[in-house]
Length: 135
Image (cartoon, rainbow, N blue to C red; front, side, top):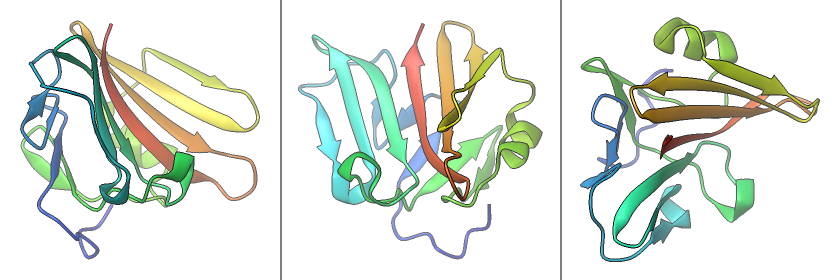
């Protein structure tokens, strides 16, 4: 969770549930998938319902997100080596979690929104993605 590999100015803001000018629950013209930049903005109709950021290069054909993660006003750099324990030390105790032997996920609920953090645990553990969504 260092900041020595930041490649762009994108901020995944866990305080405002936003990325690149898109806010969860806000409006958008169309879905935005920028696999080369490691993120996707998806929704129902014109509302943003999901913000997806990939941290494991090649996961579902996405490149790794090279921006900043902001939480409680502090900035962090996540990459595929960010561990479950590091995320828990930042976000606290998850409201739910699961482990199927291949993937492990921790879910954090904030009001009507959810932060899902998922790791591949089949072999060397690696952070796959953070997904923000509306419950």
